Length: 210
Ligand SMILES: N[C@@H](CCC(=O)N[C@@H](CS)C(=O)NCC(=O)O)C(=O)O
Image (cartoon, rainbow, N blue to C red):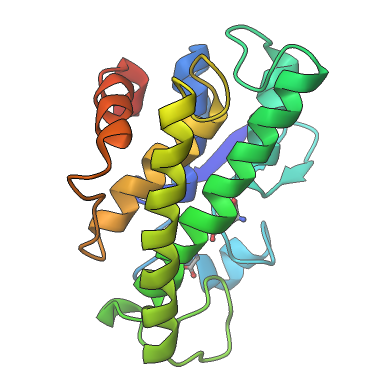
């Protein structure tokens, strides 16, 4: 089994953190995104989408979505549970994981990819054709990221953790989104006191360094 990975990439980090929480070790291969190694024929033969992370099982099966990779390992090794125990908890964790990903992580990615010089003409991840950076998308990404901070703070005012009353995959995605937002020089404000309380607790987890 091989996990195609890149140390700094937010989506790859989500999977590494998930595995570290479970104490699972997987052989990894580093793919260098800034130099475009993910768009070279060798990597496209493994994952034609040109994205990481990608998990290749021993039987050759390819799983190339971060949360799907996490789901695979949750089934293989259920403890510690990170995706929910019963119908209601599973649904809420999934709901907040998706909010963090769709409303948070992708908003930051929109601003980051459309403004970072190394990705000029590569504004859409994994796409071979040149995709120019658009200033309007930076502005939209910044606006949506700020909105995400407000939504997350409200949520953490009513729940100790993002998806449940305990640490789950929703916290991993939300925390990584906040770290990623620093790359576009955005952070929650002083008014986001619930985020500050939660961030400190989550940052103290050893697996957060994975
Ligand atoms: N929905 C995918 C997104 C994967 C993704 O966009 N990965 C980025 C790295 S964080 C990537 O591979 N970028 C390729 C590129 O920069 O061309 C997932 O969750 O795995």
